[in-house]
Image 1 (cartoon, rainbow, N blue to C red):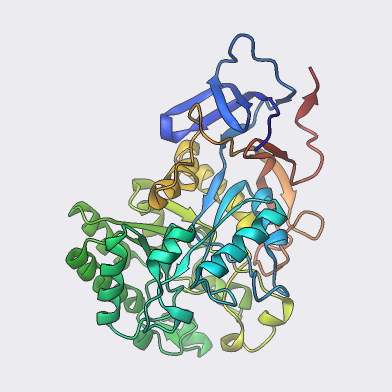
Image 2: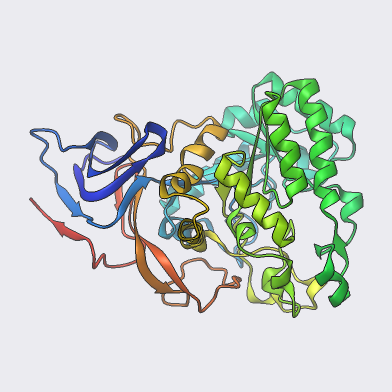
Length: 438
């Protein structure tokens, strides 16, 4: 926290958690929000940022971002990917448990918290491993992981040995009201697939992953949610049929939520054509109909959060023949501009987009964040929705360059981030933001 008094004025303040959408100011003191809208009488800031034409909102929260540390520092670190998160407007990122070592003990949780504190970037929240070493059989000490700071547990896409193991895990987590993150994919149906099972896979001669692999996994988990009462979060979802099952479960009152990755709302199996390894992701890019159904679910709020599913890779990871390349994209820094494309296309309004990136994920996690209420921790971002930039070495912060958008022009750029009251300018000089000492 910092004792600096900050005034961010003249911007469009969007706080979906409180129904706020006004042109006004945000006042910060001692690391918390003290006023939104009008500047209170007698408030004298140490620094003022005038941001006309820009949007001021809570800092984004990412439910799935691999920072590659510990264990794979050649792909990225908490420092490098934390900077990428700030540059993208994310003040909080959740780290899946498939680090090296796996996040299956309080010692590893402590290590990640310590490294995050040293890097002093975004807040980092580890997701604990559901099973020891992600072996799919032996349950981790979930109570110890929760006590050490894990708000959720999951198995990071590694299949569980049986539905009995899943039942026991759900019962254990339910006893502590611990959220379970499920990355749904039936291992047998997935087999050795690497792309969506469809026309492109057939034309390229690549083994496919049927959407049934996701749908069956969701259906099995939902039966056990009903049996155990555990809170389950599914994501990232890639198919329309799986989404329909989740929507029906929500209507029945089951404690389930879902997210999808931003790139799933733009890219499809057609983008894999030509063996484009940069579009090799897991879950795979699916059909145009699936993409459009996911868009509708996001707009309706059935999908309550949008994540990056950020997976930075070293260059060699994408240089083999397509099935041998490692799946995943470096995506943190494209979330905002791709989200603004959805706004331009009429899929979402600006407040709806901000909600899916802030209060939506916060509520899923049970985290007292994602809003600008008086007394809330001062985690917020300011972005210019019309600022143009080109993805390249001079503008990119992640250690991973594995994005299909490299060299593309983007609209929408973060200009200022505040983390716990600390000011960060992740994209260099704020030429459109006047700073002055009063």
